[in-house]
Image 1 (cartoon, rainbow, N blue to C red):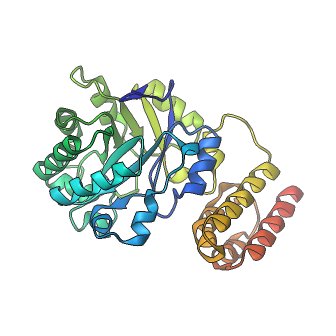
Image 2: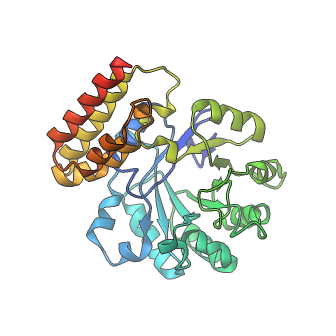
Length: 317
């Protein structure tokens, strides 16, 4: 599979862009364990144009994580064009346009999945961004605004006509948020459309490499993107079986990476939600209090002590 001139291999797995999740430390780990493409946290065009420091910092990428995409969201054509040009200067392999984020503070203001209620504007933004940059432009979106408006089949053709070089489709509508079960049937129909020649990437309810294999086999997609299942689980992309000790070592490494990259306080903020959500702790009896302690810890030594305690408890099971 290729996006532009970027060769991503056969049946590649991608790390989905997620706010407060896909920081550079986490991306490096996911890349190490087999993610073919990783994405930054999504970037607000408005904040980027205003040169908001915390937003500009999201543009930091490294050669070790390539190919890497930077995802942009907004609702204003000139603003999105200017922001895309700024993003291009950071040197990503792909600029991805977010027309799928369902959260109220984004979609409720007309950006992200909110764009699915204003298709002419969505297409104008896409068309003008494609014209403004040389970097391959891709799009991530949903099936439609709600179940009465499943528009992805027609929208996919329209987006392709705007010049995008790949399309990621999450198998839910905006109104579903993350509830229910992702419906991959419309994704399969987009892929089977003889007019579609760009890569189609499927997303939604992928929790393992086995799930990804089924998606490739049953729906014919070119790539599979994995999102929430990666929380506290950067090894999810690997087909190797890791021991509990190895997994805890990886989580401790993630903590050290973030603390060294930023500082202790913010490094812990970036990491502890991963730790608290990691599936490896589900077998520990009465884990709730330990999870609360993880989410409240403010010092690296305290978090390390909690992780070592979890290691011992898991060994005893």
